[in-house]
Length: 390
Image 1 (tube, one colour):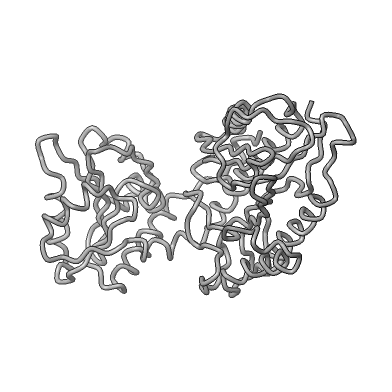
Image 2 (cartoon, rainbow, N blue to C red; image 1 turned 60 degrees about the vertical axis):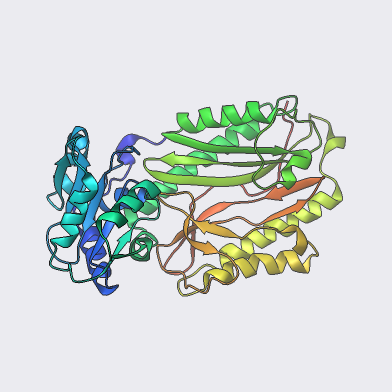
């Protein structure tokens, strides 16, 4: 495991810079305020991982004027320890159980120097119950998605964020290697999924969120739920794992093939050929990464290789998704997304080939767009893992 002394931390002044940038972009977009409730946007801007309660917690960012975070009184202490508050960039305002916090938010918006602007942005994950109450209090104000502001900031990772993603990726790599080296044959998918989550936690993940263990014909379902199916020798296993470590997400996929110690149960020529195609597709997509390249170009690089080999209909999902505080976030590597990649953008590169009722395969790395090309955060082998599994 990584020594905690080597784990990077995001300095308090960085949150001040993020808040300043969010206020500026909100003003440029014509918003009178940016209203950020509990979720990754709040954590990004303030460093506060607030509990997802029915009680309203809301950061109010205006293009001009003081920044405030309205929180329940019982949450004052944890809110006050957040880097943005402790650093003096945000003031905490508390509300009592008998008060209506939505009215406090409305008063803060109406009292701002930008109150003439008739639109506010709210974060995408804000509960509908809060949105409806705020709309009632801010009659005549247009509500827009706050992600039009925050995505501009969150897509380009700071150096510390990249290092946190790298450490999360390599912690997941170690778990893949541990699972591949252990017993597979004769165990259920669900049993291996439980072990995977335990190992992710042991490797520092505070939230081991998912462990897709898809064996045999189940491997043809990209988001298969680990089941009571018993794994047999001579069939593939798609192992897709990840979670949250130090606030940042891991997500990696490798394909295993246990033989049970019997060489006659090794992968056949058809599967080996298809895996070679997949390996080349993943490499082509990764090699295409550089600043200014459209997100859809990465998808087409992988798809072209798979199409030319005759497996085009068997590649049934996009090539990748952004990653950071959330496991799925902007940008998405999919046809139709012409948005250019930026230096510091982080995303998965994960083509797959699936033959319904028979087998499937997928390979996934987390890649950062570097100044001159791809910076691959994962380090575990992309080869087909042919193992004894006993």
